[in-house]
Amino acid sequence: MAPFLLNIFCSQPSWLLLFSFLGLLSLIKITISLLYWTYAFFLRPTKDLKTTYGSWALVTGSTDGIGKAIAFELAQKNLNLVLIGRNQNKLDTVSTEIQEEFKNVQIKKVVIDLSGDMHEGIKSLRKAIEGLDVGVLVNCAGSANERPLFLDKGKMEM
Ligand SMILES: NC(=O)c1ccc[n+]([C@@H]2O[C@H](COP(=O)([O-])OP(=O)(O)OC[C@H]3O[C@@H](n4cnc5c(N)ncnc54)[C@H](OP(=O)(O)O)[C@@H]3O)[C@@H](O)[C@H]2O)c1
Image (cartoon, rainbow, N blue to C red; front, side, top):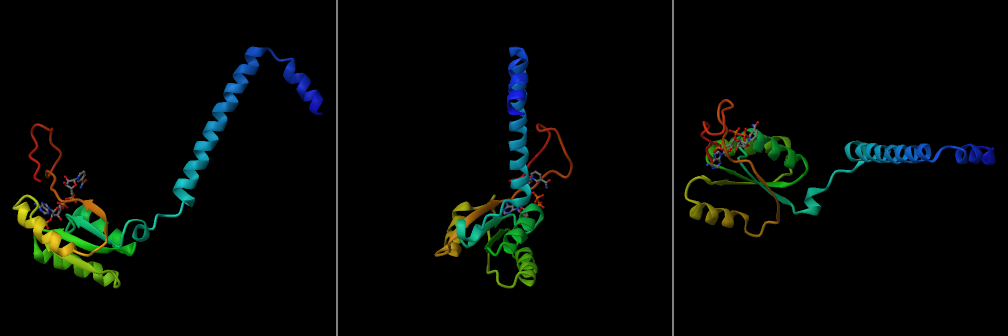
């Protein structure tokens, strides 16, 4: 069987062999990409943030929107949280919500207006995180326009 196939193979014109070879190469490339994609999305274990980076995560903009959602995600991954916000009441509310769901997570709240006096802000943040193993920083503080605007018409805060 093998010599028969080899005979057929050798009797083909060289241009056909060349194109077949290129086709085989791209098939291998597509297969490898597909296998990697399957591994990355379905099989690869998630990174343990706590042991890889440190046991504390610092989240700005944690009282609303994206930052709040990320704070919950990090708490679910068992990271302790330093939550930054401008409003003590909002910080307390988020902290309570997180604590109700994830009882073992430690939370520190720091009131800082990131568009205000950063000298004071950094000072109080330094004090709050002293001795903590902060390995993750998520910066979500900011605000968006109420509706999409052209770049030169928009007024972005922070
Ligand atoms: N949502 C989207 O689809 C989207 C898409 C792309 C980019 N972004 C950008 O991502 C960022 C967050 O978006 P979001 O939708 O999560 O906004 P959001 O729901 O309005 O939340 C904004 C957060 O930032 C905090 N913040 C605002 N100004 C601050 C300041 N001066 N100092 C400290 N904290 C401050 C707010 O805290 P307090 O008000 O409680 O103090 C709040 O927790 C924005 O910069 C936005 O432009 C959003």
